[in-house]
Amino acid sequence: MEYRIEKDSLGEVKVEADKLWGAQTQRSLENFVIGDKMPYDLIRAIVTVKRCAAKANFKAGKLSEEKCNRICDACDKVLGADYKDSFPLVVYQTGSGTQTNMNVNEVLAHLANVHPNDDCNMSQSTNDVFPTAIHVMAVLNSKQLIKNIDSLCRTFQKLEKEYDGIVKVGRTHLQDATPVRFSAEISAWRYALEQANDAIEKAIDSVRVLPLGGTAVGSGINTPTGYAKYAVEELSSFTGEKFFESPNKYHALAFKDALLLYHGALKNLAASMIKIANDVRWLSSGPRCGIGEITIPANEPGSSIMPGKVNPTQCEAVTMVACSVIGNDTAVSLAASQGNFELNVFMPVIALKIYESARLLTQATESFKVHCAEGIRPNVKKMKEYLNNTLMLATAFSPYIGYDMSAKVVHYAFEKDISVKEACLAMGVLDEEKIDEIISKAIS
Image (cartoon, rainbow, N blue to C red; front, side, top):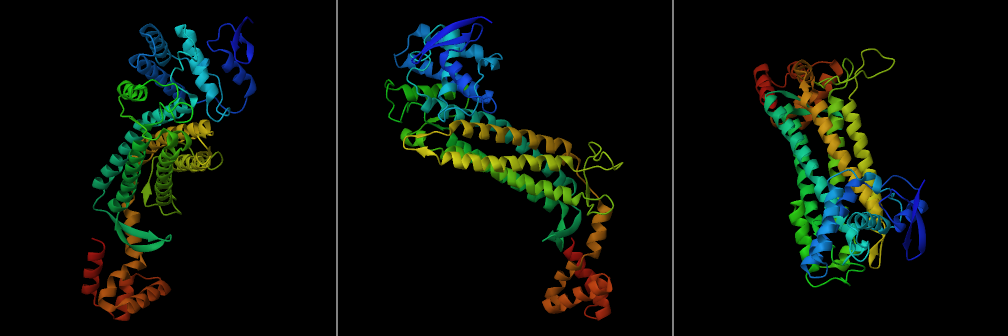
């Protein structure tokens, strides 16, 4: 193995000759062997920030055009190809992400033949670059998630229209309740997802506000006039997304409330997906001894010992994803609370959890749509059977015979194992024509 000698402020370090990184990356690689690598989407976001910072420094008159072009070319090279092997550092390192920021600086400096600190990190600190990159990553990664949620909403909307005329028994407390249209039950799922999507989009608006230009503590030390404005404008132009300069960069460095708000919106989606998936697997339970009001696609054999068994696997997968997201939210909440004085020092784990939650939900919503939701079909025969037998149809009798008498009808029907119509006739409280009229209105 051939090595070259790299130097930093602590001295000399041996680095494998074919690697693009320098001394600080090598030190971190040796000192932190904990967990997985930093998400590559975050690396790409940092590279994007570096490119826009170089443009801003040139525009502000601090960086030469030649160096600006070389840095931009290096950034484009990394963004346009697979450079994963050049960014080997793990999430669990310094809480500011300094080693990863320097890993990017060193790789770009090697490719551009410039200085990693003086040129690639010009007018920057890890303390403003790293959180800016988290924000950029979150905004960019939310786009596909929002599309997938909207697509799942449209799937449910299609089912609503297709099955609008079907009436079934409602359920509260896992007990029989008054009738409900199957389309209305589906509409609740759809509306929950629409609300979740709205919450994500609103939260993302807060994430669009960036700390870039705050440098070390929020004061903007070592930045030329106009740099922050130029850098944020460049980011908006390069990514095609709207970003804004934070009006208080002291806050932007020390607090992570925008990211916490965004992850809270992801948790909200996760909670709604648990509810929807649980409804689907309850309604499809059976096929002989469960509720069995709907069928879902039989995607794969469900048991290694029970022949012919098919399980609601997509429901199980999406609820496991949701559990992970809710767990991640606890990590993000705790990490966001650890802003001591001028800096939060739990940023890498915040970045990881936000990346992981968005990615899992993006994949899970699409998988659930394609392999489950699109194949939901009502078992009309079973729905009618339950509807005709539900005791809660007696609720519709209350305006005519009162609550107390309606309750007596229910108890009588339950004890005799007969329908509420039969109970009404047997008790002589209503004639058959009136009973049929009331029930017809209740289930229409």
